[in-house]
Length: 137
Image (tube, rainbow, N blue to C red; front, side, top):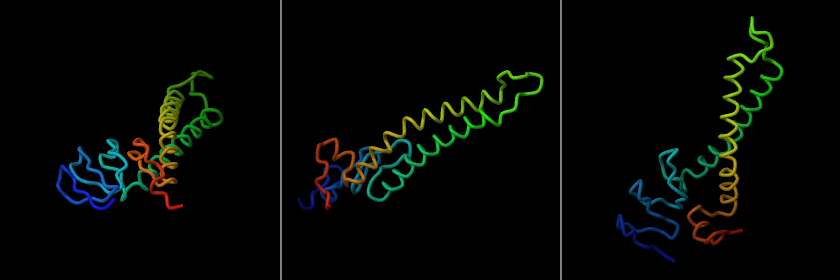
């Protein structure tokens, strides 16, 4: 369980180092390559990736809630239209629906990565069934 050699870049690597075929480099404690941040998620930036997921989910639900409250209480009818549904309300409702859908999609990933961070396991290790091998607690 000591140092190994990467077959691709021929450098020495520790047990939890993996080579990313997209970035063309070895990454310590590599979780996965994320196309949304265009980078590998690993030892140095995993915290920021989890925060991005959590803040996106919480911010999305907060945005949808604020839009709903605005629609419910603070949206005066447009002049000349009476109580009909106006363009402003349609834009706010569409924004709330899209953001709420994104938040609903991101939330399971945030929960999964919070669990993985709590068990000191990467996504690659969890997929291989090696979860909890490096748990010191």
